Length: 125
Image (tube, rainbow, N blue to C red; front, side, top):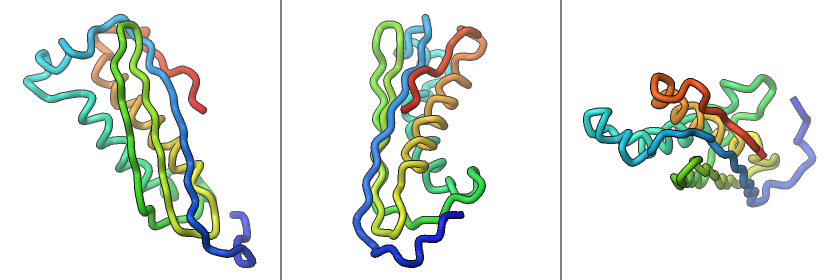
């Protein structure tokens, strides 16, 4: 764990994004899943994961996050996911933003697994 004892607490923000590539129409997927919207579910998965980053990634500082936004946009051949995370702390929130994107994408992949076993997560940055 990085020693942040000497650092001042400031407002920290981080942005991350990724893309899920698939051949499945995401709009039709919600109807198939008894009305459960996979986009809404994946947004919640991303938010929950960001809040649990210190439990998921070894040596991450546990942070009280002030704000988490996970945005998901379904396009014709992909789903674009982005996350913005903010906290007043001595260390950055980059891992939390990346974790939010990754878990939102994994949630989408989970809902697609039987329809598109080749769906993949790309460009996580």
